[in-house]
Amino acid sequence: MAAPIQAVIPGSIAEDIGIAAGDVLCSINGRDICDILDYRFMAQDVFLRMQINKPHGETWLVEVEKEDDEDLGLILDGFIFDQMKTCRNRCLFCFVDQLPDGMRPTLKIKDDDYRHSFLFGNYITLTNLKRPDWDKILSMRLSPLYISVHAMRPEVRARLLKNKNAVNIRQDMERLYNAGIEIHTQIVLCPGINDGEVLKETIEQLAGFYPSVQSIGIVPVGLTQYRQGLPELHAVTPEQSNSLITLVDAYQKSYRDQHGLGLVYLADEFYLKAGQSIPDSSYYDGFEQVENGIGLVRLLWDEFAQAEKALPDALAPHKTHIITGISGSIALQPIVERLNQVAGVSVQLIPVANRFWGESITVTGLLTGQDIIQALGHKYQGQKVLLPEIVLKAGEELLLDDISVEDIIKASGADIKVVPVEAQALIDAVLNHDYNGE
Image (cartoon, rainbow, N blue to C red; front, side, top):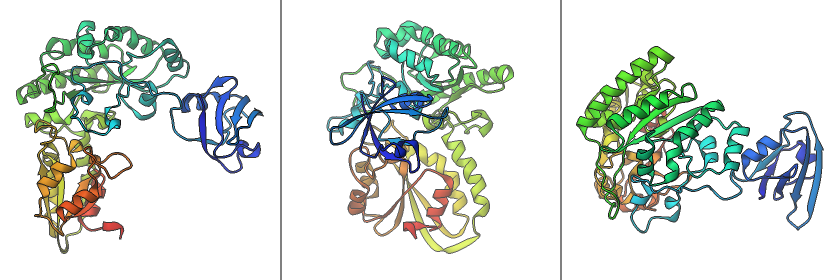
C-alpha cells in the first residue's frame, strides 16, 4: 500500500530531509500505510524508518529520530489508501437497493468501513471485519465508533441484514465494551420485525453496555417506490410513532435517573409524523446523533432563538422563497413566521413533494432536481429562492439525480442561492446580508 503525499509543511522534519509533494509514503518501520490512521499511529514513534518513492522512480529509505509525538509534517492525499471495506449485507431496508436505474455509480457504493466510522461518524455493521481489522480497532483504540445494531436478538438481526455473521452482535459489542471504546448505536425501525418486544430487548441490552454505549438512536425505515422484487416492509404510522414516543420517554426517565443522560433518542421524523412537539434541547443531551436526523429541528430552533435577538424591526420591502421537503416545512414554519414579523420582509415556503422516491419520503435532503424544477415551474422567474445545501452532493452543485443548480436556474428562471441549513445563514440570506456574495 502507498500513501500519496499532497503537501509538506514548511520547516518540518519532512521538508528538512527532502520529502516533497508528489512523493509517496509506502511504509514506516516495515509496516504498510493503508490509511491515515496507520500514518498517525506509526508516526508517533521516536525512531522511524520510512520508505519513500519519488515520482521519477527512485526509492528512498529514510531514517528519522525525533521527539515523541513530534509531527513529521506530511499532509497525505486522502484517508484510505487501500480498498474501501464495503458492505456484505443484503439488508431488507437498504436504501441503496431502492435506487432506480440510471443513478450515478457512486450512489450505489455500500460503505461499511470501520475507518470511515471513526473518522466521519458513518454507521457500520461490524459484519465484514476480519481479525486484522479487529486488531487494529483495539490496538489503536479507535473511539468513538458508530454501529448499526437494529436488533440484539441474533435471529432478528440476521434476518434484517440477511447475513449469518450478523448474529455475533453481542460478542462484538462486548469486545468493544471491554476495550473501553465509546459507541453510538443506531436502530432502523421496521414495523413488524424489530419493534415491540424486540425493540425493548434491544434498547435494554444496549443500555447494559453503558458507559461504552453513549447513545441509542432510533430512526424510521425509509421506503421508496423502487422496491420491486424486494421484501415487503411497512412505513411507521402516526399511531406507532405516538406509542414509540411514550415508550422512549419512559426509558429516558429511567436512564436519566441511573446515568444522568437519556441514552435513547428518537429521530425528529417520529415527532413530526405523530404531530407532537419536538422535545427541548435537554432531551438530546450532547446532540450526538444530529447527523442521523435526531435533534436537527431542535438545534435549528435553538440557534434561531439566539440569532433572532439581532433581527431588525424593518427593512426595505423584498420577498424570499425557501425550498423544503414536506417534513422540513413543519420545522421551518415557526422561523418563517418570525421573519415575516420584520416589516418589509416576506418569506414563503415552497414545500416540494418527493415524486422521484415516492411521497412517503418527506425529508429535504432527499429532494431531487427534477422534483424541484416541477415545483418551481415558471412562477418564480427573477425571484429569490433559497435552496438548502443539504440537497447537494458534498463539494458539488449536483443533486441526487445529477441535475445541477444551474439546470434548476435555467429551467425555472429563479434567482437561486444555496444556503447551509443553519439559522444564521438562513437569516442572512433572507435579509440580503452577503446575498450573492456581496
